[in-house]
Amino acid sequence: MGYAHRDLKPENLLLDDEQHLKLIDFGLCANPMGGLDQRLATCCGSPAYAAPELVSGKQYLGSEADIWSMGVLLYALLCGFLPFDDENLGALYRKIQAGVYENPEWLTAGSKDLLAAMLQVDPKRRITISQLLMHPWLTGGPSFASIDPSSKYKVSKHVYI
Image (cartoon, rainbow, N blue to C red; front, side, top):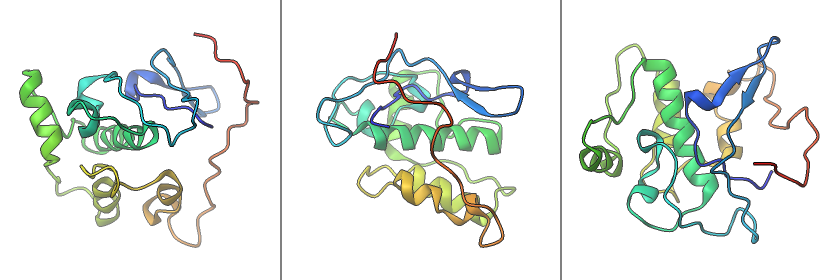
Protein backbone atom coordinates (compact mmCIF):
# COMPACT_ATOMS: atom_id res chain seq x y z
CA MET A 1 0.00 0.00 0.00
CA GLY A 2 3.00 2.27 -0.45
CA TYR A 3 4.35 2.06 3.09
CA ALA A 4 7.49 0.48 4.50
CA HIS A 5 6.94 -0.51 8.14
CA ARG A 6 10.66 -0.78 9.02
CA ASP A 7 10.08 -2.25 12.49
CA LEU A 8 8.53 -5.67 11.92
CA LYS A 9 8.99 -7.84 15.01
CA PRO A 10 6.78 -10.04 17.21
CA GLU A 11 5.87 -7.16 19.53
CA ASN A 12 4.28 -5.35 16.58
CA LEU A 13 1.99 -8.22 15.58
CA LEU A 14 -1.33 -8.86 17.30
CA LEU A 15 -4.24 -11.24 16.77
CA ASP A 16 -7.82 -10.06 17.23
CA ASP A 17 -10.72 -12.14 18.56
CA GLU A 18 -11.23 -13.71 15.12
CA GLN A 19 -7.50 -14.53 14.84
CA HIS A 20 -6.92 -11.85 12.19
CA LEU A 21 -3.38 -10.53 12.18
CA LYS A 22 -3.00 -6.87 13.11
CA LEU A 23 0.15 -4.91 12.39
CA ILE A 24 0.80 -2.11 14.89
CA ASP A 25 3.34 0.61 15.73
CA PHE A 26 3.84 2.61 12.58
CA GLY A 27 6.18 5.07 14.31
CA LEU A 28 9.12 4.20 12.02
CA CYS A 29 6.97 3.74 8.94
CA ALA A 30 7.98 5.44 5.69
CA ASN A 31 5.77 6.49 2.79
CA PRO A 32 8.33 7.73 0.26
CA MET A 33 7.18 10.56 -2.00
CA GLY A 34 8.51 8.68 -5.03
CA GLY A 35 6.73 5.45 -4.03
CA LEU A 36 8.27 2.20 -2.89
CA ASP A 37 10.94 2.44 -5.60
CA GLN A 38 12.51 5.41 -3.79
CA ARG A 39 15.52 4.54 -1.69
CA LEU A 40 15.57 5.23 2.03
CA ALA A 41 18.62 5.96 4.17
CA THR A 42 17.50 5.93 7.81
CA CYS A 43 18.79 2.95 9.79
CA CYS A 44 15.92 2.16 12.14
CA GLY A 45 14.03 -0.70 13.71
CA SER A 46 15.13 -3.50 16.01
CA PRO A 47 18.70 -4.64 15.33
CA ALA A 48 18.00 -8.41 15.27
CA TYR A 49 15.34 -7.89 12.56
CA ALA A 50 17.28 -5.36 10.46
CA ALA A 51 18.25 -6.23 6.90
CA PRO A 52 21.94 -6.35 5.89
CA GLU A 53 21.64 -3.24 3.73
CA LEU A 54 20.38 -1.25 6.76
CA VAL A 55 23.14 -2.36 9.11
CA SER A 56 25.70 -1.69 6.36
CA GLY A 57 24.58 1.94 6.16
CA LYS A 58 23.50 1.62 2.51
CA GLN A 59 20.42 3.16 0.96
CA TYR A 60 17.64 0.58 0.70
CA LEU A 61 14.13 -0.09 -0.52
CA GLY A 62 11.65 -0.36 2.33
CA SER A 63 9.84 -3.32 0.79
CA GLU A 64 13.06 -5.33 0.49
CA ALA A 65 14.02 -4.55 4.09
CA ASP A 66 10.54 -5.52 5.31
CA ILE A 67 10.76 -8.88 3.50
CA TRP A 68 14.02 -9.60 5.38
CA SER A 69 12.37 -8.70 8.69
CA MET A 70 9.43 -10.99 7.85
CA GLY A 71 11.97 -13.77 7.19
CA VAL A 72 13.49 -13.23 10.64
CA LEU A 73 9.98 -13.29 12.12
CA LEU A 74 9.09 -16.51 10.31
CA TYR A 75 12.34 -18.13 11.39
CA ALA A 76 11.69 -17.17 15.03
CA LEU A 77 8.14 -18.57 14.84
CA LEU A 78 9.29 -21.86 13.30
CA CYS A 79 12.46 -22.35 15.34
CA GLY A 80 11.82 -20.63 18.66
CA PHE A 81 15.00 -18.55 18.41
CA LEU A 82 16.43 -15.84 16.18
CA PRO A 83 18.54 -16.65 13.11
CA PHE A 84 21.03 -13.89 13.99
CA ASP A 85 21.68 -13.15 17.64
CA ASP A 86 24.51 -11.71 19.71
CA GLU A 87 24.78 -9.48 22.77
CA ASN A 88 27.45 -7.42 21.02
CA LEU A 89 25.85 -5.14 18.41
CA GLY A 90 28.90 -5.20 16.11
CA ALA A 91 29.00 -9.01 16.17
CA LEU A 92 25.24 -9.14 15.51
CA TYR A 93 25.61 -6.87 12.49
CA ARG A 94 28.46 -9.01 11.11
CA LYS A 95 26.24 -12.12 11.44
CA ILE A 96 23.39 -10.37 9.64
CA GLN A 97 25.71 -9.20 6.85
CA ALA A 98 27.09 -12.73 6.43
CA GLY A 99 23.54 -14.14 6.31
CA VAL A 100 24.60 -17.50 7.75
CA TYR A 101 22.08 -19.13 10.07
CA GLU A 102 21.29 -22.59 11.43
CA ASN A 103 18.75 -24.80 9.62
CA PRO A 104 17.28 -27.02 12.36
CA GLU A 105 16.39 -30.56 11.32
CA TRP A 106 12.69 -30.06 12.08
CA LEU A 107 12.28 -27.47 9.30
CA THR A 108 10.66 -28.82 6.16
CA ALA A 109 12.32 -28.43 2.77
CA GLY A 110 9.61 -25.91 1.78
CA SER A 111 10.13 -23.75 4.86
CA LYS A 112 13.91 -23.85 4.37
CA ASP A 113 13.44 -22.73 0.75
CA LEU A 114 11.17 -19.86 1.76
CA LEU A 115 13.49 -18.74 4.57
CA ALA A 116 16.48 -18.82 2.22
CA ALA A 117 14.57 -16.64 -0.25
CA MET A 118 13.54 -14.15 2.44
CA LEU A 119 16.90 -14.09 4.25
CA GLN A 120 18.85 -13.49 1.05
CA VAL A 121 21.66 -11.03 1.85
CA ASP A 122 21.54 -9.44 -1.62
CA PRO A 123 18.27 -7.46 -1.65
CA LYS A 124 18.05 -7.72 -5.46
CA ARG A 125 17.99 -11.53 -5.16
CA ARG A 126 15.56 -11.52 -2.21
CA ILE A 127 12.04 -12.80 -2.84
CA THR A 128 9.45 -10.10 -3.61
CA ILE A 129 6.08 -9.87 -1.88
CA SER A 130 4.23 -11.13 -4.99
CA GLN A 131 6.61 -14.10 -5.26
CA LEU A 132 6.25 -14.74 -1.54
CA LEU A 133 2.45 -14.86 -1.78
CA MET A 134 2.73 -17.51 -4.51
CA HIS A 135 5.39 -19.61 -2.74
CA PRO A 136 4.31 -23.28 -2.44
CA TRP A 137 5.02 -23.32 1.31
CA LEU A 138 2.35 -20.63 1.78
CA THR A 139 -0.14 -21.77 -0.81
CA GLY A 140 0.20 -25.48 -0.05
CA GLY A 141 -0.21 -26.28 -3.72
CA PRO A 142 -3.37 -26.35 -5.84
CA SER A 143 -5.65 -27.71 -3.07
CA PHE A 144 -5.13 -24.69 -0.80
CA ALA A 145 -7.02 -21.43 -1.15
CA SER A 146 -5.00 -18.54 -2.49
CA ILE A 147 -3.81 -15.86 -0.10
CA ASP A 148 -5.57 -12.51 -0.29
CA PRO A 149 -2.94 -9.82 0.39
CA SER A 150 -5.49 -7.01 0.60
CA SER A 151 -6.65 -5.47 3.84
CA LYS A 152 -10.28 -5.71 4.87
CA TYR A 153 -9.96 -2.14 6.17
CA LYS A 154 -10.27 0.98 4.09
CA VAL A 155 -6.96 2.70 3.55
CA SER A 156 -6.80 6.28 4.69
CA LYS A 157 -4.60 8.74 2.86
CA HIS A 158 -3.61 10.08 6.29
CA VAL A 159 -1.36 8.32 8.77
CA TYR A 160 -1.68 9.38 12.37
CA ILE A 161 1.42 8.87 14.43
